Length: 271
Length: 269
Ligand SMILES: Nc1ncnc2c1ncn2[C@@H]1O[C@H](COP(=O)(O)OP(=O)(O)OP(=O)(O)O)[C@@H](O)[C@H]1O
Ligand SMILES: [Mg+2]
Image (cartoon, rainbow over all chains, first blue to last red; front, side, top):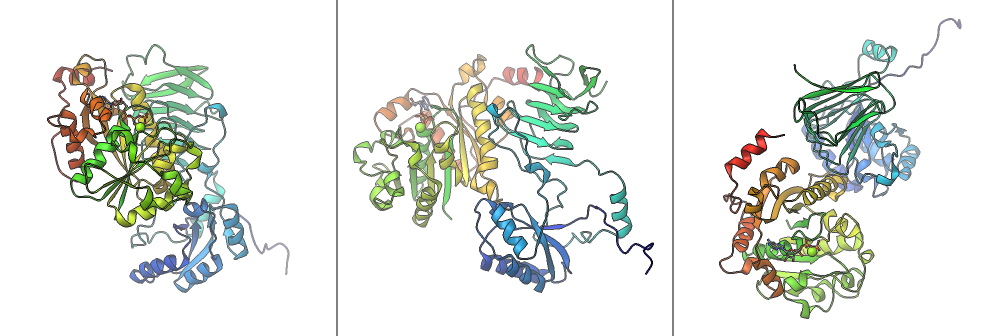
């Protein structure tokens, strides 16, 4: 056979994957509930590859027989492809059972900045996450493997920056970091909370905490807030605090923030 | 299904123990089998406010260490038939508590009680964490001042991210705001935050407002939870809180805000 005709190609691509969030290490209970749900929509899965999401049981560190679970799933038309999250031990056990390892969601790698003022809490939000399966009910039919042409397009254009969306209040002592992407917050951000993004930050509610956009030095990053009450604003390391209060023209109002040279400009969103 | 309710605040001295005593008494007065647990290990206050300090023989740490049974440590309340108290230890420190032991105690209590009320210590350290970890619902006790509201905000953040319900991906802990030591006169004078101000920051449902009253100190000195006081604003307010918690739709009393103040709020800033 001629060597001119390649037998394979290796490419990266972002494919949608269903995640099965495992909430218990009780195999009997898990099987029973799975079987019950699957009875309602027998053909729903049709050999769809499934990622087993283990974060809920990670802390317990308890074991689970992944081979047994995978076999059980296969009987029901679900093809366990690998695991997401989980403790080191759980991941090792999954590999032994022949499952793959999905890389952890980027939001888990929270950088340690000013360690003396370590935050108490960080929301763990997963990027690129498929919408949750509402009890496996129908309607999620488009969750089929992407068409080949689409997959190719994804692979050949530069990766789209992920956007992290937070829909719960961000409170004192909490820090959210959208690594490598944008951050959108739909609920209030209170004083003493900190938003950090390598890209832009949008807050569609009162913003009373700190907003640090372009955290890795992106000078084109911007901040948009619906109610400007921030304690601190920063883009690419240029920051501003408001000892004298926030300028009248934007105080409590929709505002946008960008960098002009080394000056941080805060402007009303609408003129 | 038994419910675990934590009374928490972050900031100290805002009225958690006062609330734990009256709230658990109110639940019991309505016929619910209720137990109130003092998690403030090392300080031990609840038994004083409930007036049972002289009957304390064993405490939560003895139970956790397996030295005595729960039954031996529980103290029956003198005012309510359905109420029991599990006191804290005065002699041990907070490290004597551990999640495993607390889990075991709660599981056992769930077998025979409707409500388990946990009086949290101040702060955000291990004692407060133990008290909140297993909560199904939380009463966040807040005084009308900025530092208290800020601490409540922090506690709400921890509840949303670190409680068992959060960690296990269950339905979130149900949050209730309880504003205590509220003095409408000082609010109107601009010396204290209004209920509206507090809600604007915390954004959780308001369960009630307890007025500032000297009778609270008198009640706790005499070892009687404030809810048992005769002709008292505070007792009425706590009864309303219990009623609302049980699902009744009761008008908010003791809030009396002047319209002008609200206008200032909306117009300003
Ligand atoms: N509604 C009220 N009016 C006036 N005084 C009050 C009221 N509620 C509580 N107090 C007083 O405030 C003080 C602190 O109350 P309490 O011990 O209940 O607070 P706590 O939050 O449990 O404190 P700690 O954080 O130390 O446990 C007590 O002296 C109590 O009498
Ligand atoms: Mg107390």
